[in-house]
Amino acid sequence: MNVLLLGNGGREHAFAWKISGSPLCSRLYIAPGNAGTASCGENVPISPEDFPALKAFCLEHSIGFVVVGPEAPLVKGIYDYFAGDPELRDIPFLGPSREGAQLEGSKAYAKAFMREFDIPTAAYREFPTKQLPEGPSYLASQAPPYVLKADGLAAGKGVVICQTLEEAQLELKAMLGGKFGQASARVVIEQFLSGIEFSVFILTDGKSWVLLPEAKDYKRIGEGDTGPNTGGMGAVSPVPFADEAMMEKVRKQIIEPTIRGIQQRKISYHGFIFFGLIVVGGAPFVIEYNCRMGDPETEVVFPRLRSDLLELLFAVPSGRLPEMTLDVDPRFAATVFLVSGGYPEAYEKGKPIDGLSLVENSIPFHAGTTREGEQVLTNGGRVLALTSFGDSIEEAVRTSLKNAERVSFDGKYYRRDIGFDLVISD
Ligand code: AMP
Ligand code: GLY
Image (tube, rainbow, N blue to C red; front, top):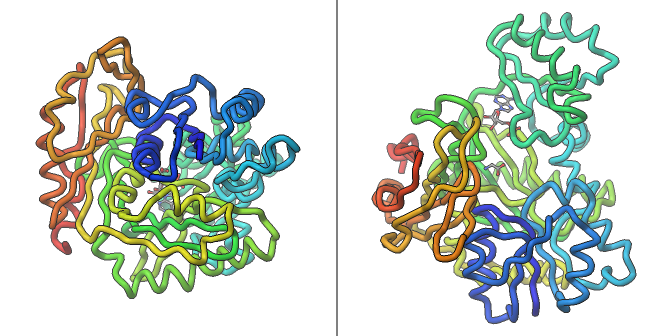
């Protein structure tokens, strides 16, 4: 079959790398892709949010399966666009409906969903702009730290944790005043939870589901989990503390009630659910839902899948998901992201990347890269994720770090402590 994959991050390079290795794949197109996906298929310069251009492309290139990587087109309703068009509706499609994508696209929607279906999450209250006058007294009735979340998508920047009441009051005012545009016209204020985070992924057709390997992501820019949040600086899979007893709680208390909720609300959901979890006193709580795979988690989860990813993904629209089982590599996978100097604040693009051919025993997943003739250039904040295997977390990380030294570009930065907090329990 001809496959069209949407997106251009490290996640999509991992999708493209697995899909292109499948005997079921005739041609793979990636819109718009990056310098890494270009080695797995053909990049096409179409934005994942330009639905009419995607329609024309699908019809011209006999696309037999569309796979959506990032959240933005899903939240914008790409599933509904395809399902509602007589020329497109028969093309098998992987990605939830606009309503399903609200689990990520609206924090207020997700919180109300969790409350309705008894899914453990932090206590919260929602503030639309008109209730701004009540904000200060509500915040004053809470204990610090204060967690303020813009309701809508805010490029990963919409969660602000304030240590003092004064800071929280100012932040609430700024958010409701449009700090994140429409995304913060509504703000969720929630209880601060203290614990260790990890990421759980399922692939679902809205009824049955398959559990993928779990992962732990390292979000802060600085070593020792310091400094501002990023899209993710590295990841590890499996997660030693996510043992069978923990995963049983996750299944019973989180995954099953989420699927029940999707069915009760009659939401059309064909795709991934990414549960961002935090463990507090041995109990898992949902910090956030995402309607897609994680990045950089995908760069450690997919390499561990020995099963044919395309066959697994295609089982969703073809109704065969209940028959699917996964073959997973038991070894540890770790990925270390090389990022542009200055990221997650301002950074420069267009720096030549050298040494890619020197990478040994790691898979270099491209994220913010582009090709100019023979030269690969940086083209984003997160540039390249180096994934390696090992019999221990330390061994996997060490291999990625060795390769991180071999690849060079002006301003290169990476964290050397990915996975180290887990090593004691490894
Ligand atoms: P999110 O964008 O919802 O994943 O939030 C970004 C990060 O903020 C999370 O990964 C957590 O580290 C932190 N965070 C979000 N909600 C809470 C909470 N209720 N308590 C503590 N930390 C939180
Ligand atoms: N790694 C976190 C995310 O993809 O949102």
